[in-house]
Image 1 (cartoon, rainbow, N blue to C red):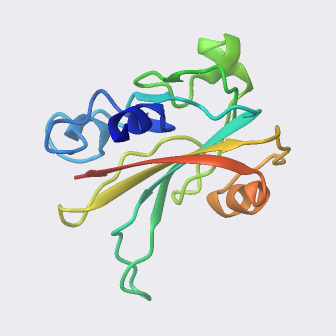
Image 2 (tube, rainbow, N blue to C red; image 1 turned 180 degrees about the vertical axis):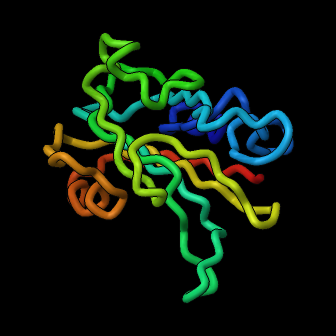
Length: 170
């Protein structure tokens, strides 16, 4: 029974995350093999009934800040994802209009580099955790021209009907 319930849960996965739970170097902005700002592929399952829209926030939750020991660093914000999408393909960031179809309505928000889209992390040290949070929402929200993590989280308050999380290491 417990395994049946686990299979029915709203889940977020990435086929590129290795068996150790590590984000491959090609999705970072660091070292040999890095592909500048290549977003990782994501897949999700069991979207809750009644979902009208979805949103994604990706953060380095171990980022150091000179004024505070730890301050999550936003790598990617995506809003207005239609619930019929089953994932985002590798390298999708910045190509929503090019890919077209249901992807054309997505809105990539500004990350902490102050630009829209995925920005691969360049870390001062390894061992950082990256948290991917996918929100199922009960309505399509209007976010305005510039979406940030803070604005998105404020807008979705009271509209979240499900949340799937995935944490990886780098």
